Image 1 (cartoon, one colour):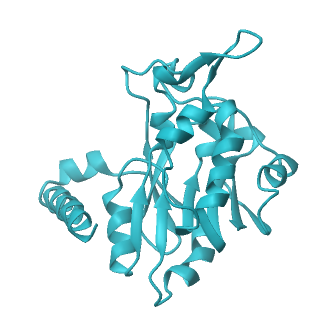
Image 2 (cartoon, one colour):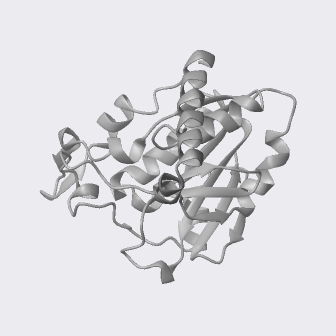
Length: 235
């Protein structure tokens, strides 16, 4: 794991050095950023001298790998949103509707031992994940977290609108995230990627969120200014 992280860190540093030498390139790769109260709350845990095991849900992020490995923690990535657009997952339910096979999905993804992780970075996954997968996936998170482990998730408020862009989040400070706009691969035909972009599937209110995480021991809300509600839950 260390050698893989080192390779990604080297690649990330190389890209940064190139952008520094080429102002035009630096301007092209600059991403919007946002302050995260939930991440700031987690910073106390992340500064701990005890090594943590972290699950980062999204495509591989050199910035996140660097951040956690420099703090002595181990990080795993699992891009569930991309995986959910696999057309082989589509089946018909009893009413003849096309749905995603949640059993097959969980058999192929989030395949880790129970109670392995101290922290799950869920980001905005529930808002964009197919409806049939949300509750089974959250249930799997509960199993993967250690007792007392924490999960950070972002939920859009109603004002965000269905065309709210889907972002990959990169940690650049104890309370700061860079946001990278992501789109599904063009060769995927699953429901999430059918329109050529990841579309906001639903808007959870506080009661929906509390119900989604009802098996967890505690939940804390942070309301941000960018139509995002941050949620920090404890297993």
